[in-house]
Image (tube, rainbow, N blue to C red; front, top):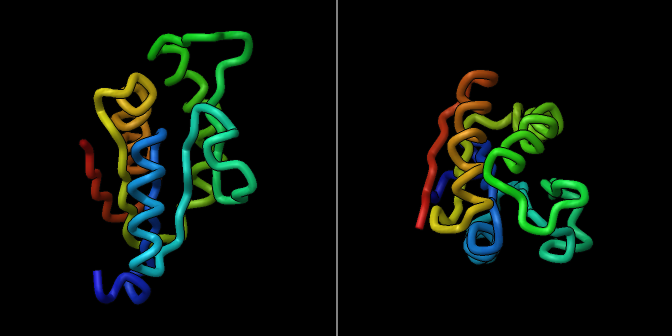
Length: 121
């Protein structure tokens, strides 16, 4: 991680735990970041976030979350396509992260030529 700036790296925090871990990493290492959140209150005031919210659903299914993620894929790709390395952090027991992480990894891998590292808890 010492040469993270020269590697042109972005860390993506997915869900509550992923965002908290990414925030801790950002305190130690100067990286660009993107947060994918289910609720806007989690990362309010942050311009480097994308809210994945299913309209009029209190407890959305994994399929509904994936569908909304796919609808936001162009926005995600536009924000991370310039990086050589992407680190994705999330919590697999969370319904949100378990729905987002595999699809996000596939979107990134198939659309941009970059190294992708996925760290899950």
